[in-house]
Image (cartoon, rainbow, N blue to C red):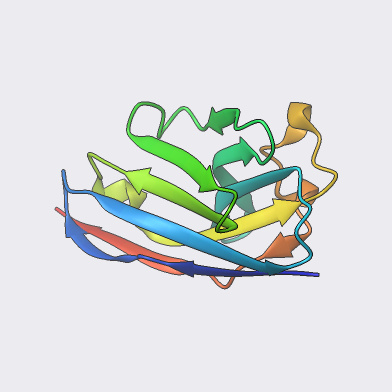
Length: 125
């Protein structure tokens, strides 16, 4: 089992920045971790993912060049630096992890076995 706890959400004005953190405990081996959003009536929406060992990063087109995903392996933590925030970025951001995530479909929430509770990000206009 992997336990994931997010932090860092909050209220920010459009154009501002936030840093989200995801702390992991329990089983340490995962091959990919990522950030996804709930989408009522649909599958969770992919935001970004990172290969835990090699550090390769992947982004949704909507956040490319604005968000940066990173990890600190020693602390077993993942981060999402969010810049140039827009009102449409408002959502609950959940971190996720899996140990058999396939890179070709890593945007699919079905690849991830472990989920945090989420942290609310609200961007005002």
